[in-house]
Length: 509
Image (cartoon, rainbow, N blue to C red; front, top):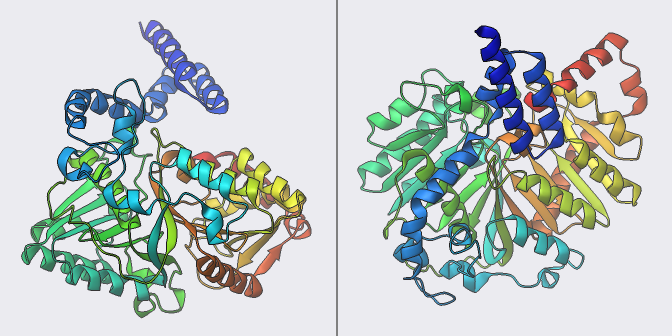
C-alpha cells in the first residue's frame, strides 16, 4: 500500500512539475527530487514547489470577473472619470476582462503626467528601456515628482513619524520587518495616535518578518485599535507551504499625497543612537507626486489579498492634488512577485544592462545573480562599460557571504570590478547607470528577491539622483577593498570548497 501510494504521488507530482514550471532547471530539479526521494520528494514538492500565489490569483480573478465586467461599463475610457473611486478597476484588472485585451484606462493623475519621451530628460539611449518598462511594469512612467534620499534610520524614522503625525485622512504602511524595539515602538505610537485622531490607518507586516522580534509589534498595534495584518499567515499561526513566499516591500503613504519607500525595515539597529558604531547602514526615499498613487495601489492590492478588505472612499482616494514641490522627476513603481509579476525586477536589470553605454554601479547586501544576469553583467563589461559591484565586507548572513564568494571569479575574469565595503554592514540596494537612470527599492540581487519575494522598486530618470548614488557608491569603493582572482585563489582550499557547496544551495538562501 505504501509503495503504491509512493508511486502515485511521485508520478502526480512529477507531471505537475513538468507541466507548470517555466524554468527548465527548476523543472528538472524538482522532478529529480521527486523521483529519487520516494514519497518524501512528493511531499516536499507539495509544500514548497507549487506556486499557490498564482493559483489563488486565478481563483480571485474568476470570482471578481463578473463584478468587474459590470463595473467597467461605468468607466469612461480615456477621460477624467474617477476610475478608482467609481469602479475600482485597475489597468491590470482590465487586461483580464473581455478577451484579455488591455483597455487604455489610466488613473486621472497618472494619465496627465505620463511620460512619452525620456530623451528630454537626458536619457538619449534609454528609449528602449522606457518601452521595456511599459511592457514589464503595471504602471506608466510619470513625471511631476519630487524625490529625496534619506540616509539610515536617523533620517528615515523621524521622517516617518513626522509624516504620520501630520496625517489628516489616511496612513498606509507596509514592511517586511517591524521590530518591537525602541525604534519600532516610536513608529507604532505615532500610528496609534493617528488612529485616535480619526485617521484611517492600515499596517501590513510580513508573517516571517514579524517574527524577528519577541514579542511581535502586532499585538501593540492591535491594542491601540490600529488595523494591522500579517501577510501570508492564518490563525493560529504559520502556513508552511507559504513560508518561502514573503512580502519584502516597504512603503508608507500619507493621505495619498506623500510617500516613503526603499529598502529599510523598521528596527533600532539602523539608528546610531541605539546601534552605535555597529549600526547598520541603509537608504530610503521620500517621494511626492503622481508616483505616490502607484505606491498606494501596490498597498491596496496586497492589503485586499491579505484581509479581503477593499480600501475605497475619499480618505484613501482624495481629490486630485496640485503638486507644488518644484521638481519634475520621471519615476515608475515596479512590483515583482511569484505571480504574474514573476522576475519583473530581473527583466528591468537585464534591460538596462543591454542599453548601458558608460557605467553601471550596483550596491547590494546579497548579490547572488543567476547565470542569465551574470552573463548580462559580463557582456556589458566586454562592451567596454565600467561595471562596479559593491558588497558588504562582513555580511550579516554568513552563508550568503560564502555563496557570493564562490561566483565572483566569473565576473572578475572579464573585467567586472567587485569591491568589499569596510566598516558596518550596509543594507542598501542601489543601482545607477550612465549618470541618468537609477533603480532603488526593496530588491536584492539574489534568487529570493528575483523569484520568491514580493518586491517593490522604483525606476528613476534623474541625473541628480544618479550622481548622488554614484557618489555614495564611489565613497564606499574608495574606502573598500577590491576582490581579485588572486585574492580568491589565495584562500585555503577547504574554504573555497565550502563556498562552492554553499553556493549550490544559493537559490534557497
